[in-house]
Length: 119
Image (cartoon, rainbow, N blue to C red; front, side, top):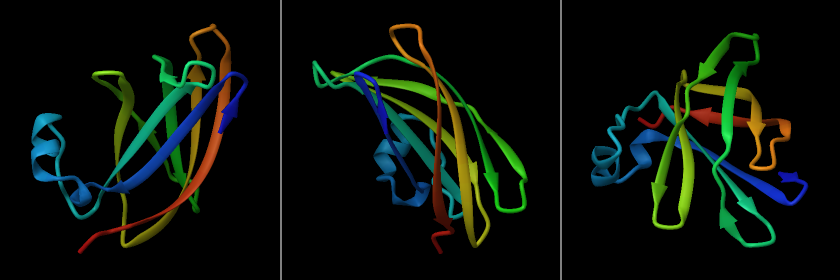
């Protein structure tokens, strides 16, 4: 998602897809009904990850709202933000994020993703 000179990258995947050693290293639970939301923001000029302020909420199709609490993870040149979200068998979530960029601008971002329980 383009945000001026910045680009927001996102993914949401079932936490059981994480390698066990990665889950342990970051104190994450690998559970069939838990999804990991991963956000990274890049400066398109330098091609480097940048720190941002991040708040968010996920809503399913019947408008049940679930707040997202992001943790910042830094690894070498990478900076990413992780939040967990519980899901049922198969759900579509709309994600609304407030992103405070390094230049101080607040951007509102929305994306939708279908999520599944991993048996």
